[in-house]
Picture (cartoon, rainbow over the protein chains, first blue to last red):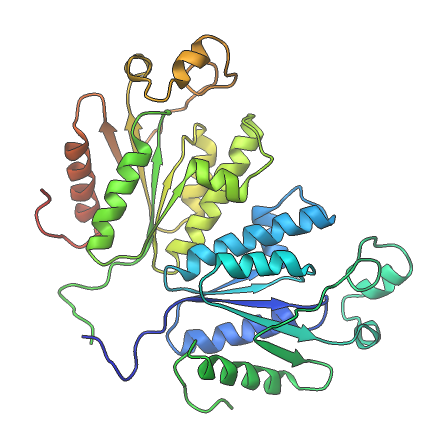
Amino acid sequence: MANVANPTPRGFTLWFTGLSGAGKSTLAQRVAHELRARGSPVEVLDGDEVRQNLSKGLGFSKEDRDTNIRRIGYVCHLLSRNGVVAIAAAISPYRAVRDEVRRMNGRFFEVYVCCPVAKLIERDVKGLYRKALAGQLSGFTGISDPYEEPANPELVLHTDRESEDESLARLLQALELGSYLNSGPPHR
Amino acid sequence: MANVANPTPRGFTLWFTGLSGAGKSTLAQRVAHELRARGSPVEVLDGDEVRQNLSKGLGFSKEDRDTNIRRIGYVCHLLSRNGVVAIAAAISPYRAVRDEVRRMNGRFFEVYVCCPVAKLIERDVKGLYRKALAGQLSGFTGISDPYEEPANPELVLHTDRESEDESLARLLQALELGSYLNSGPPHR
């Protein structure tokens, strides 16, 4: 029987955008873990894995990046309209195609994972920025390729000055306030 | 509260394979309608639509066909492991890649929609066989391109000698017997 006080949350698409190393994948995995604990079916579509499975052969030109993002957006649409929380974590640097994906998906929550390039160069966990700055990686977003910030994201997380725990707590609170989620136990 | 006598069916992948015009899409839509009426979330991945969204730029060489089928299989996997019944309707002419998709998906039910080419040429609803026979369509499965029949499909439907209703009823019965589905009201 339906429980009116606590209806089953419907699917939606949670879209993380931001520079390489800003924290998209980590936050995607952490929020996925939390939502699963609350009983939602959740699928994480991470940029690299998805490229392997849906976009082998595509490169990093604007056109190829847009095609890749459209495919991720289409799969999020299929999942979310069937009640799954589809979480995308991909740089998705171009605003127009992100907005196209937003229109394709019904319930769409865009999170801009924001961190200044200077900070990312300093951290450089994977050593990619060093290579990009040395000219060994071409078309690297934020260095030699553009990143267009979202104009009206549902949430901005500042991973240079918030801890991971703080970002996660802010995200869960925003999802609850926006009725994307039932409120869970206080997040610790 | 869980109803033990009638547990929520879990997701699975229902894969229709067969020649163009054999009846895959029609049966996919009809079984989808029936499963939705029984309360399952259902997504139909139809060959043509999926090509548009996931495989633009791919052609009909063996390699490109296989890539297209792998992508459909991957999306079915994502859907079905989240409780959705993922229904694929694509010619999928090569056995090896169908079996690869079977291994990738947990619960997999393959339906061979079988109709002799002579009969399909006779019907030729879309006029494609006429064009293929006239040499105006190259690489047309069943005429100028191979179709490898499934070695061990879960079900074979003979659409040259069964009515659509009969095929649908046999499919639903097989799904129930295989515990893919709860038994529903007698199908009329």
